[in-house]
Amino acid sequence: MNLHEVARRMPGTAALRDHCRSLAVLHAILEPDAARRRCTFAAPETGPQTAQLLHRDGRWLRVGFSEAGALLHWHQDPGQGRLRVLDDVPKVLWPILGDARCDCLEDPQLMAAAFWREKGDDAWRVTDESAPGGAPSLLRCLTDRSPERARRFAAKSYGTPPDLEAVRHLIDLRPPTGALVAGLNPVRALADLGPDLASTRYPFGPSLASPLRPLRKTLLPSAKSRQDIELFRRRDASGLITTAAFRYRAGHDQQHFTDLRANVDSDMVAIGGGATAVDSPHGALLTASYPADDGSAWLASSKDHNLPQPHRLTAFAIGMKIDGVSRERLAGELLTVVRTRSRYAAHPFVSARVPDGHTLIGGGFRVNWQDPRGGNAEGNLATASFPRAGDAWTVRSKDHQVSSPCTIDAFGVCLKSSFVIEGAEYIVDAWTDFTENEGGPVPHPSCALPLPASGHVLTGIGAEVLPTEPGSLLWQLEPTADGTTPGVRSGAKHHGEWSPTTLCAWVSGIRLLRS
Image 1 (spheres, rainbow, N blue to C red):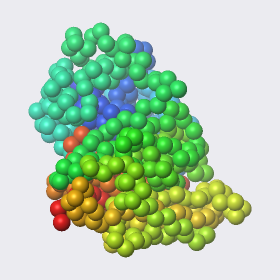
Image 2 (cartoon, rainbow, N blue to C red):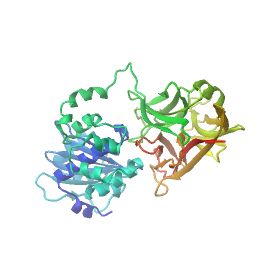
Image 3 (cartoon, helix red, strand yellow):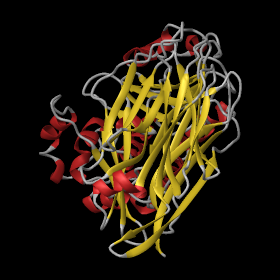
Image 4 (cartoon, one colour):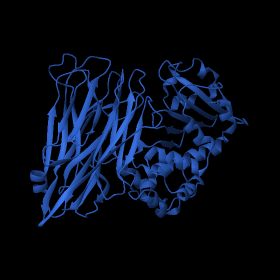
């Protein structure tokens, strides 16, 4: 990657700022949760404005804008950057890093490369010809400001390509409309964008001028209330099975979460789910994703490891109901959850096998890292939770850098393979598929996979980090919520030590067929 060539292709400061602004609003429409967006832009009333672009494998770049000019940079892993990169950057631009609380002001060997353009300059300058750790696709999002490039970035980020004309509308900084927002994401409304349009200073029409201030209050719900947000709801080809995905995000940061609940509707049973922690700056990892005993919720747990990482865990639940079947019959007669515990080990693994006459529709795991037998409970972290050959749900975990053996529980969610509804017999037709991340082994692999358009509804999601040493760990396992085709998105990361790996994402679905 020749950075001097990139610098020659970079637009002027004002044009770059407007482009980052438009990308951020596009991503705000596609992804309601700001913590999971691949592009953000913050334009406070005073001080520097900051844009950040995030690659699926965890690499990122940040652009800061101030009265003195603009600064674009990214980091390499600690100690792997280049010495004195920061020394090349004019000190008049250093406050941009200070306002962003950037660690490279304290670690001289963290910054990998930097571009800058002072006020009055007619071109960008750059530290060196090439640099480690860069993401060429992110730089192309800035040098190529076309709607096609923005659309490609969004498709790789969230799994579904957005409408090109809608993207063009936003890239041109035209005020968004209700129809445009609904077309890009049916679960979003124009009014939802008030805080995002205000924080990015994106131009908006008069219909949003007055609600901006009241809308800000909705960002901080009362501690006494909880909001389990429904992401999508689908029926299978028979019209009898309904599944819906729900999300709940913790209301505060902490280093460890245990059994954070994502509730399903009262007439449903939780049959699948997942969780998302964080992959940067240090990362927090998953330690549990499994069904509550009464089927009312899916439970998720996470923790940081060796390096402090306060974070807000997000839990996801997939609920199911069947027309003509009461919740009591579904939970007590048709569904069975098989739980199997592994042996006590540093890298435990186990499978929950499907009983005769049943079909595997999902599953989960619980790492028992606080096992009292462990003299050193630093933590054991999930590396796999996925369906194996259709007859078992397999889970794995590992200690990492510090010895911490424990057990792990596998949960297999199974539905009777055939049953009667109002005098008619139906059989369960299951679908399972997987995909690998692009580009082979990488330090922050991620991948997404939708269900096929075959009348199946989403019931289970899984992920598997292919074993390597020292190994990578799961931080993300969630149902996709792009408002169109349900599916799965998963993410893993190396932690503390360089360890590129390959990640697989698994998706499970079912439909009923008349016998």
